[in-house]
Image (cartoon, rainbow, N blue to C red):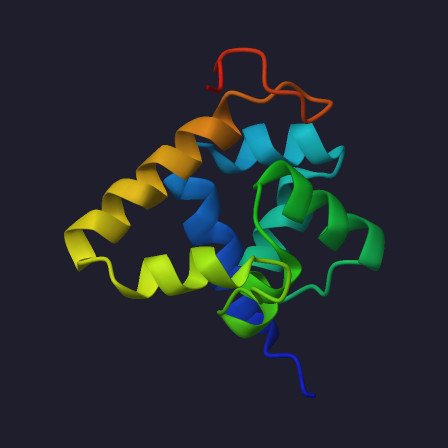
Length: 118
């Protein structure tokens, strides 16, 4: 598989903006220079595996989404997949918003402190 680093950088930049982060904020979170992050986002530098992993963690996105543009759902139970197939686009957008709320409420250890589950 050939990695398209221009596309990878574009996806990183898009996700960063979706989360409302400035380049300097993300670079500080990653412990790298703003110039290095800019070069990654523009496809001029290839991130190390460690930096790539940190980017995925900080941007709360899977490596497969950044590399391939899709998310593998091998670990999602079949009943959830089947139920999602029955949803309208509007319902899927709502579900996505709810999942994002859950993920955003996690602390740095991945523990959800704000939502009480029934």
